[in-house]
Image 1 (tube, rainbow, N blue to C red):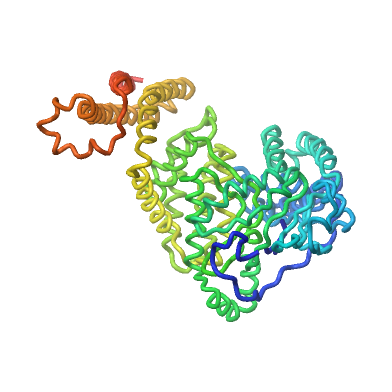
Image 2 (image 1 turned 90 degrees about the horizontal axis):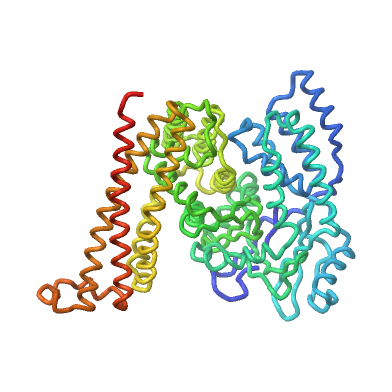
Length: 600
């Protein structure tokens, strides 16, 4: 919340890097008061006047909307942030203008702050806090943050919601419906689904209306992000309420302050980095890798690494102080997106384009998949050339700039991207603002390639861990039970795609059917091989004389858990059933391919 919020170091639980040296860059004062004004009628007249004068460019359209949204605050800020995501729909300069929007609000009178805290905590403010700074350190349109100290405890950041916010949001939602239904097409220049946009706004607002959600996000993230050397402030759960949050105060340098010092006092910044043992390049790469791990390995990622929300700490640690825009992906989407990411970093761009189409909503009836694929492949090849070009600004060779080219390729084909894709795009775009300062000459294709190599090794290590073997066996049985059904669903899906797209989809469907034939054949062979291995283990456990002659060479048998006889019978029966189903599917895919090769 706010541009230069710093929250306490070392953490209260005592682990983590050493205490930092005194900071050079101080926080900024809260912004001046913002009026909850912004007449829709005045906005429309302004648009019409600019259009008549020939000055309503996409950037000017974005600038006028940004000023309107900033004046309104609250829900309208969330709307602007969501619109800025849609680089697949809007011009890049329009999105750039909206992304400059800052959520700043007027400072509440201290008596209002006291009233909210005492109403939520149920006791006088002095009973909870030894000291409390009546002047806030950051103010937004939905709340503000104060520095305080608990009795006998550390300094804390106290976040307080604005009184009456619920009523304001209800009115704003009614205004939003009118805004989108009456003026959305005129002001935005495109047609968007009002229902989808409203749902996204409501989800984004939920975190501002109930701080307990953010508390849950922070508690879930604290341990796992510590492995990435990312500090999550400790939340004092005894004071966690809907309109009040109390968390430890962390001292560090925000990336906004880093950028300012880099411009104004570069030598002083170098001395501070050296004194605190901070290597900007190592920190930058670790931030990028942390985001990749959150998405692909942990499936719980922070989507708003804003430079004002990211602090540099001694020893190369970083901290994230505000936790909203946390997201998880559906399993099927995450698998496809992981394959899409790997294909990009392996420079298999045709494969990446095919996977991207699977991540998009249904293609328009007139779409030409081959042409769309070619545009996406060309965009990715351009991205590759830029990443290896020395001297280019980071903004022109970052991952988000590469995705920007891909999204423009989709837009040119009138293919919308899904909201999950856009949220991921926003997350990487936010990180890129800091990476441009920390690793301006980095090659993100090389960083991503290194990440995926290490991720595969971590996956292998987890798979061979003794404690994971029983879980792995259970997962293997689940795959055996569900795998054939999954492939059947894919067969039905491809049939539906073929019926919908007819000739336009014929070549694509044929290729996918061919791929599924190969995969089902490999899966059948793998299932058969696994079944033979497990049969040997079963015999060694329950019929030792049968394998007595070769028992000495079967050392792998000892690594399997001992199962009851009936359990083994069930396991082997499932394997046999899966093998039969996979072989049947393999033959069905072969027939589809042979029919597709016939006359059209």
